[in-house]
Image (cartoon, rainbow, N blue to C red; front, side, top):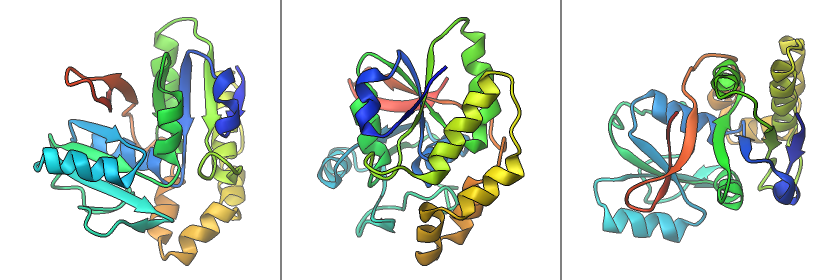
Length: 221
């Protein structure tokens, strides 16, 4: 099974794609569904998120740009923020890079969200579907620059899929030295940093599906 990186690899992605954006959208989507959200709608632009909120006032809008919460939104792109109020809610999420990459790969593919947090659950879920060609896609920074944590996570998925074992403590140490980790420290988001590097803390596998209202959203497999 191959590994893919950045938006340049979109044309080569297979039918089943595990999209990996460790810092932070993958973990945020996983955590939202873990906390009981009905669905998570990924959108590319702030304007699109605002439009959905105006049309559906009861929906919750979360997002960030350059790592910081968007003014006027209900919350951030953070898996550690207070999510106690989102049970059975529809969430709209826009991020600097992750949602852009989701938009780029959704047509004609089965897209699931992966991170260290749900690596075993994702592999088991995909194996249950039988013989599949699966692409583990490290989306990087805005889909344009490699991100150490995403590359390491994709490698870890690939090893797990092939039945191999990697030294997870070594992987965590490498990820902590990357540019993405340093950026979270500079933004005082150390809690997110440590949370996103935990392995197998969740069993939820978010899958992108087209709803009856013709809106793409992540729900549980």
